[in-house]
Image (tube, rainbow, N blue to C red; front, side, top):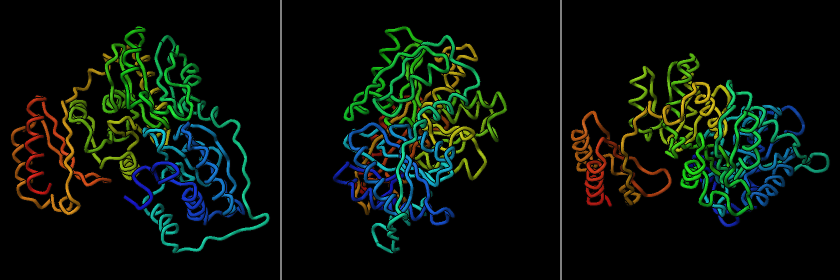
Length: 450
């Protein structure tokens, strides 16, 4: 983890942790790092934002920083994060910024940066930006006169993105009646038109943002309302997005949850059946449900696990020539269509698969069996966090749990990337058994290094 940037950009409480002054500095430093090899006099940088109250403030600060460096800015308005990733390539821009704190409450905000390729910045670029801001290691130019940047709005940004996602769908959604929870976020500007264009009859939920209600008891982190609505209105299913619409979860016609692993299983098998899954491989993380790993083995598919975080999933895909991967949380990457996780694209692919196969979502979901999963967090000292890999008592307990579970479960103990915590995750066939084993493991950790 960097000093400013985490696994998904710079993030914090707006106006105290993520201030306007910091946003100006990020704009100036990032402009230098991202455009230093550009041959044109004025580089072009896009800015998108989600619907939270502080996004306007941070947008203005980023504009000031970028223009004061001499970059021209194109404002996309409120759009999904994957729209920025797509439009930076379509418009031939040098970089793109997305102002969003994803699924976090409205008082938080964040700044994600995309290179001109549409991919999030690698660690080394972020570290250099941090060094410029925090250490003053490089002097930034201060242009004057005609050297300053200009600002204009992209009038067709939303439509260009909608058209792009629609073009990735090979079979329409004609005859489907679905509910869509926009989390009062970025999808509020795009989802209804997109899914109506694809042929679905849409029931819209949480699609009236007021700057404060983003992610408030709605969206992919609060699925209860969507589940209830689908059941009560006898729909074919429902999809839910987070605040910036880069992740998607779904429910079937019975209101039962389809998490990211289940969605990936359905889509991976469909892609493989059409010879569209490169190297017959799906990329997940160490937190992917054991049921997904077993699904891959049972269907002659390869499974590759990375560290937790969609950026690590993407890194593996790019390095090894894979084109499909994602996380249990609903970040799913169809690399043939997008350079980042795209919730609405994922939902469109899932629903299109169901409609083309003329199968209900509940039937499709049967291809994967979820193993019960228990996750417990143990607070430890910073020293203990470093020492745990060498602790013999903890290692022995982990081995004991592994022997107890055998081939029908697993245990994973890993440190948090942001907090003084160890996370204990156990999967198995019997929920009560794994709860007991997890608590025993936690007790050993607390005794040893807690």
